[in-house]
Image (cartoon, rainbow, N blue to C red):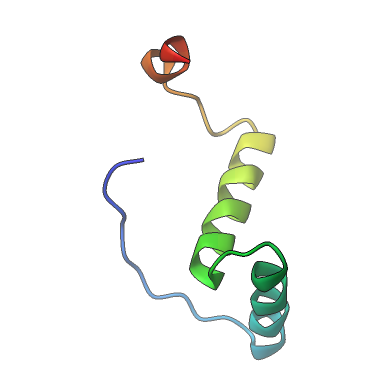
Length: 58
């Protein structure tokens, strides 16, 4: 995936609590859970294009 971009994210306390429980259920950190959910949403919306060279290797 390459280098990670850092940025500040402010969340509603209730939403953070939901993400915290959800991430624990899936054995991820909250940060990893947010990244996973955003990537899945981007793929579902057709905005995440797989790298052709990477998919050819698999």
